[in-house]
Length: 458
Image (cartoon, rainbow, N blue to C red; front, side):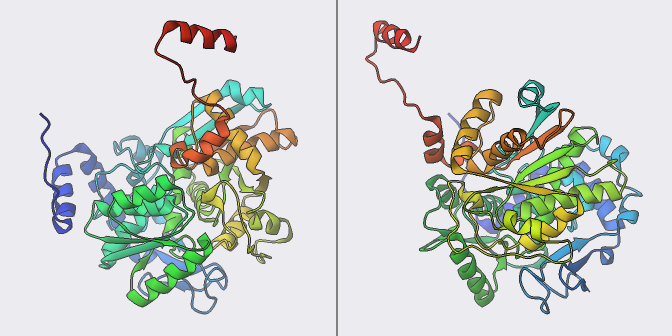
């Protein structure tokens, strides 16, 4: 019979998990990374307003520049890259056995404490050369972040923010989400002594809400859109002094999200792809991907920065619309009051990190492509049947964008293209069933019945 251990109180679990892990080689790798992090004077980490350019220490501000306000005054994390690269480089990574995002700890704004044994990152990068050639490019790579602990890319950001809350001594974390960010925060918080409080639109997929409840979060299903849930979460966080993980609000999210770019580069032996496609809602994920590549280039890890292309859904595409008329210094962004798409993870009318996303994409000659819901549904099925990778609608949107760019002749025959699949297909079964356009064959339990069906199929 299996032995079932009793559930320990939350205040005991964080200490216990680290004591179990302390005997492993993984913790030895983390310790060495933490030593490097400690050697780098934490005063070299600054927060800079993307609007006015004013810089702050981490203790001076929590979320955004007060002079510029939210969105215009969102913050970016700055490091002393010259100092870091003296001890953190491709050679040092070769001897690091840590398989998760914590192998990049010197590039994260954390001390190295409070790290849980749950693996975040280290997700596979698959190469499908034949599929790429079928569409007219040299090769296609798929970064499958549906393999993360809670099955989405958002785990990378939540892991960083949960630790930051612990460093700050804040007992409660909160966020607004269409589902993935919330489930990732709830999952990582569950292994700590933190309380998690989640705001989702009432329309959030059942599978995502179920994750939240299983992890023990307090969940508010808000009558309204994601943007309504975001505003309510922000008000509650201010009133009750909860630490807010919401996209575009917390400056440390982008730091976790940039680790996907670091992994792609390292998995390709620092010979980065020519083009990287990322689905876009609030703009935080794509900001992280671009920032990761830019930092690697400045530190001489990679010889070039890939062209990064954001993918938005047709009726939730405010950033794609704003991009052509914006510059790196001036973003012209018009919000949408009726954003809607089958890809709930990118159904955003008021992109909270959109200004940062556009500014970053302008730095790397990036672009946007817009796809329809039908394109996304087709992509779920075609990607699954041609590669074996099953993505939720927002994840498969990058495959839809890839197909659209190929059809438009915007990709070259020598291009190596990477797609970031941001969530597992099991996150939204209703959309997957709609994409499959098929039903199971109901039969009596007989070989004759099997034969009849097979004859019809042939």
